[in-house]
Length: 99
Length: 492
View 1 (cartoon, rainbow over the protein chains, first blue to last red):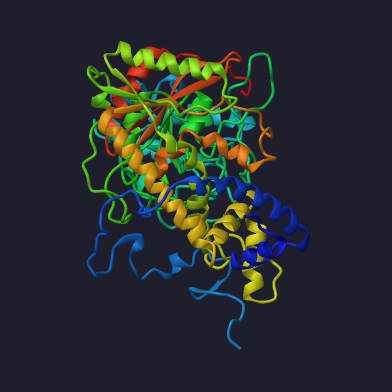
View 2: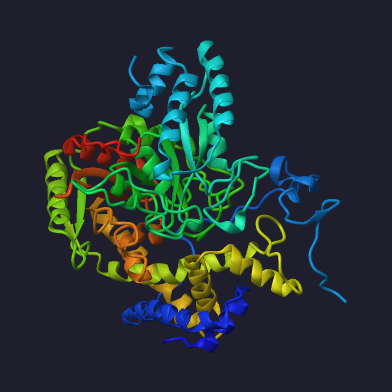
């Protein structure tokens, strides 16, 4: 199942990566090469096989509904925003999203 | 006095405890070697001041006869582990300037036990690569060279900085991570010992995520004992990682030297690829003989699903990566594009500038296989084939205790040799990737040199949480191989 230029354009948009028009054709070729190689999975009989998302056979643990200490705790907006490329008064600054 | 950097981690630990050496002297000796080894490009950040401060604190504890199991031992950290107030890049431009406000659980555990942080080690961008060539900071160069050649070789990837720095004695041991072979293949390429523990053995909290169902941290070390010491400190249950498993961490070092009598070693006939050098096949057979001599019973096994492991991996890993890497949007940390018109173009331009080609390729593949209309054909099918690979190992481990294979299908290759074709590069992980898909512990142990004088490794795989058996087997391999070659110090 090869993928074409238009599909690459669509997927790049979904992935929020700007790809210049001249890159779409070479990318389609590269990605098709990888997907063609992956096609061999069609040989495998998967009838009645359960899909496996994790190898750990445990149910996810529940945590107490309480404020944590340390880095996963609250009350530290300055730490949360410390690495933001743009911030003001401990808020993230982004281009206007609502008119 | 002997050069402190010549000592193994275990020897240095003992010398420090016995007050025959100081951590500050050891730290200065390593910092000076790091400074001279710029040609290897193994470090992204050298944390000299932090290292000296930690070493002094360790010396104070050691003077009082106190300190943890790693007290005063200088270590390197793969730059995928978040370190508080120390630049953490994941080898990517998109994390420019990122200084986490928290410490990953693994590094926190190492510092708790007395380890000294020398700095952050180079890696493939977001750990996506098998040669260290996708790093924004340029490739790491393998300390090993082929006899009579000065061609630059890859130290493997993605943990190339970890493998090269341990091989070149720029640290006493290093942390690394393994999603498809990123600890074991670099270990094989540099004659170091690399251990990927059972999925869930080591906390992933604070490790920059690549593929969450496959990622697992482990050590790269000079020998099996050093790896056992490091893993003991790194491992353990962590409530902050919901996939971290709450089982006791054994003393792996205590397992070394235990008798292997009666242990069953599986040898899977499918662990061969076209064009694999005959020397690897020969070394593998030697490994089988060594295990037999150690009292093991050899069992021929078949793992016919092996050939499907890499294609499964190249659906599952990019799918998880495309989701994990959605967080790099120019808002919370790292790089933001200068030019944009609105929020959408800010995201698109930031990510176009910040990610390298291989990372983009994998995000696009991942987005594609998860997109409407293709999910069942690719992602769901891959998850089902993954289950079949897992089941095949479960059956095999009903008959055997360990599985012995080569670590990689070749020795270290020249930088640039495999960058043109992504699939050729992916094939490096053909022997290692199965352990990630099945969540098994695996390790590479240096076992010999090829005709060009380059190191080759053998891999052992064990049942989930059977790291003690794994270490027993690794130690026996190490003893039998008697590998003691070191690279010429052309870089110093």
